[in-house]
Structures are given as structure tokens and as C-alpha cells.
Image 1 (cartoon, rainbow, N blue to C red):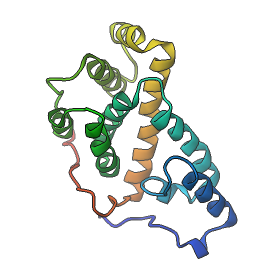
Image 2: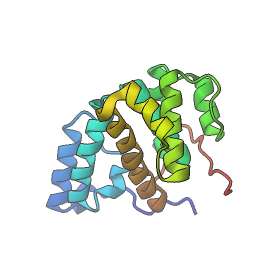
Image 3: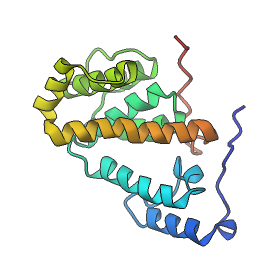
Length: 189
């Protein structure tokens, strides 16, 4: 059940389009291919377009790297996505997200000591997951703190990282070697 359905393609077996998409990705800030891009290279045009969205959201968004990484962890927990979790938890902690906050998310609990910004992000993303929309009260809090562009960047995080999670869950993408596998599926409700 855990076998990677779409492991890396040897370079000599890639199409010219796949090689071009790989070069484009590796010449950007990521510097290497991994995680969701291993299966995504099977659709090189989609990968190219999608990775540009991700590059913006990860490196240039308006909510800040710490908040962005916190949002990724919330989404990773929603989808029980171990690769996203393994890659992004160390970054989130390096950026100042408390280990106890990460542990609570990992366990499926609302963290107790979130920053005001984390609480807004958590509420927006939880409402999107549970209700498929955001309440007026939560929207007003997000708008006041992050502005219109920030609200769009924040909800785009949910869509982008959900897409990556869905791809990796479908393809059973393996956690990169050397990273801990902490994420377990949440019980169905």
C-alpha cells in the first residue's frame, strides 16, 4: 500500500518536454526536484505552470514566510500529507512557529498558543476545509490583518498545497530520505 506509484523518471527516459520542465524548476529558488514534482513531471506543462504559482506563494507572498509555512502545515494536516509535512515543518520551526504548535497540528488539535496571525490563518483554512467558505467574521479579521492581496495569497495557499497533497496522496509519493515520517492519517469522522 505504501509503494511509490510514480517514482523518479531516469533522465535518459524523459521526454524533451519533461527535461525542459525539470531545468526550469531546478534553475529557480527550489534548486532541485523533489516531493510533488516527481509525479508532476509526467505532465510537464502542468508542472511548469503549477510550480510558478508555488514559487510565488512560497517565496514572494504577502503574508510572510513564517505565516506561509504555518499555512502549509495546516493544509498538510487536512490532507494527511507526510511529504509536505516532512519538508515544511523544519522550515516553519526555523521561521519561528513553535514546536508545540506544530505538534498540536500534527495531532489534529487546534494549537493553544498561536500568534494572532496564526489564529487568523488557522480559522480561515479550517473554515475553508469544513464549510467550503469563510464566514464574514473570519474574513473581516483576515482582511484587517493581511489586506485583500494577503487574503487572496492565503486562500491560494490552500488551493495550491491541496493540489500538491492530492497528487502526492494519489501517487503515494515517498517522504524524502533522511526526513522523519511523522504524519499519520487522521481518523475519518
